[in-house]
Amino acid sequence: MLNTDARKNQDTSVKLDMSIKPDTSPPEPPACSVASLWTPDVGSGDALWQQLHARLVQLLQAGHWQAGQALPSERDLAQQLKVSRITVKRCYDELRRQGWLSRGSGRGGSTVQHPTTRVQGSLGRLKGFTEEMRELGKTPSTRILRLKVVRERTIASVFGRPSGAPFLHLVRLRCGDDVPMTRENAWYDLTLAPALADWNGQGSAYDLLRTRCGLELTGAQQTVEAVLSTEEEAQEFGLSEVLPCLLFKRRTRALVQGGGQDALVEYVEGLFRGDVYVYQMPLSV
Image (tube, helix red, strand yellow):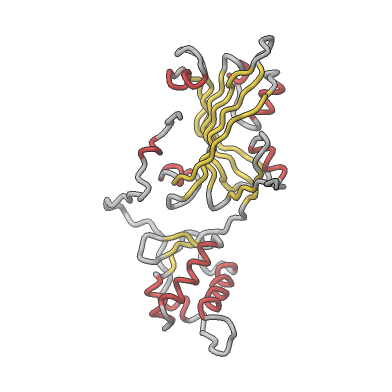
């Protein structure tokens, strides 16, 4: 399997940069910001953590804290509210699960973020990101990170081409409704699809392979594995920390004109955010 980045050598324990840097993080809210806005209701049928969770969601929806602002640590908030740390932990865990908070660097601390609706994609049919977003009622958009014609021996060997064969290397961030969802790292065989050499990287590659290049796609082989994003990839997604992702590696083949055989035309590694994407697949009995 092609190793296109340092992910295979990545330490999944996630090493943090401990060098001293200027503190540009948003200031923590005053100690009384939560304690003064919530009082436990001992007569309620809901557990304390559920009451606290409901109140914090109200405050978050009302914009009491801005995205990127830090909330008190679990221990500090428990002391302010005079409740157990378990109560605060269960509340914070639920807020993280719902996408309101991301884990901060402090002990049990959290950073406010805007929740993102999870996308339920389907597997089993070859289709591009553009088509999938439109099927889900979202507006697709693209930010180009790299677009260059390259000649690389390692890539050529993947496609079974001579070492000097040209390929279009395209790295792009794909968004749905302006939310970054996946990072594509793709190569296209310009020997088989020379018309892609002047492509600007926008829109669907599969549409262009069919219409501009006149190729008939015959199918693809795809693998899926769970990985952690790199720090650089997390920053490209607009996140402050690494996160679990789904790494799709796909080899797409197209019919060679006049040859009656198919050949590899695309190799792509798509990194999909684990907090956004949920894939479903129908199973027969």
